[in-house]
Length: 289
Image 1: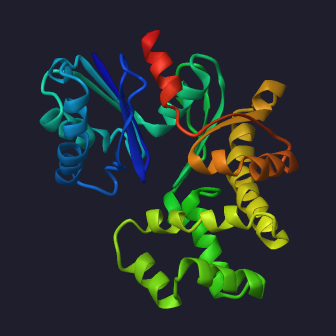
Image 2: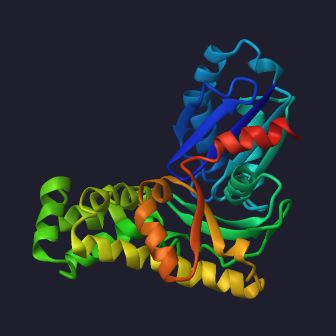
C-alpha cells in the first residue's frame, strides 16, 4: 500500500493510491518555513488520526511519495525524517519537489512546459522524465509572479498607495475589514505572511468584471509569462508549436483561467491543461510505474 501527497504552502492533499476517492487534507508543509518538529506535529495531529480511521492497513505502508513546496535536495530530508518518525518506519520514502509532482501529474511521461500557480508560483520544462532548470521562483518577496501571494501583495500595495480607483479601494476595506495597521502587522510581524497575502486574492475574483481589476490581473499574469516562461523557452530553444502551450496546476490557475489565458495569448502562448491539484494525475502515474 502506498501513500501519496501533494503539498503547497497552504494545504496538503493525501491519499492512499489504492483508495483514491478518499482524500485527507492537512495544512501545508514547507521545510523552508517549518522545522522538523513543526512538521511532525502536523503529521501527528492532522494526518495520522484520519489515516488510521480510513484504513486498517496503514501500518503496512510500503511506500510514501511526497511532493512538496520547498522540497529542494537540501530540505527534502527534513520532511523524509518527519514522515519516518510519525507515519512509517518501514516504508520507502520519496520526497520530491512540487514542481516534479506538477510535471508528472500534468504530463505523465510526455514532454511539456509546466507551471504552478497557487500560493506561490514556479515553472519548468519537463522532458517526460526529468525537470530542466528554469527561471528561479525566488519566493513571494523576490518572485512568485502570478501566484496568490503575489496578487495579494500587489493588491494591498496598490490599494494603500491609491493606485486603484477609489471605489475598488473602498470595496476592499468594506469586504475584508482590513486596516493599514493590520496589513502591516500581518505582513511584517507574523509567521506565514505568504498565506495571508494569498488569502486576499479572492477579492479580485469577486470583482474581476471591474475594468481596473481585469487590467490588474492581466498584468499580474503577464508578469508571470514575461519573467518566467519567455526566458525559460528562450533558454531551452523551445520554439516547437507544442511547446508554446503551458500546462498549469494550482488554485490560482484554476479560478483565474480566463484572465490567465488572455495574458498567455498576449505573450504568444496558449494555456493547456489546468488542474486544481495534480493528485489525480500522480495517482495514475504511480499506478503505472
